[in-house]
Image 1 (cartoon, one colour):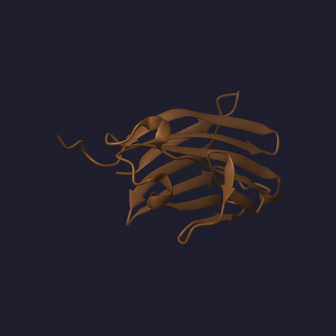
Image 2 (cartoon, rainbow, N blue to C red):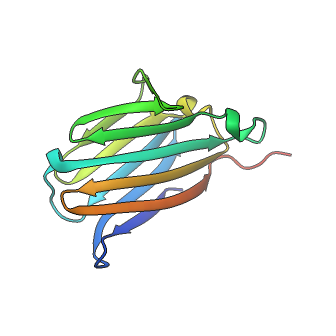
Length: 138
């Protein structure tokens, strides 16, 4: 099921809704702006850390996507990686759509996500969230 997060500015005004879902081997992050924005002033970082019971967390990739306007890059362990097949980023005045293949995250059972988004004069952060992707198998 998609997880929906609502981001507010300091005046408690809703500015962004973000949904996160996993299907067909991809992580979908969809950010919908409550008001029309100037996309060339938007920037942010989305952190996606995986957890798998079979591997130490310290050995799992720490992946994040950094964007500024229409430019974007993927990083793992703070090193820029080639844009993976299936990875995509699109931003316009109304939304930002991100797709990252699960294999880039080493096919985790749980996903830790955190985001920092800057829209012109508004700064928003999403605290760390934990999403169960696959049920624990014993």
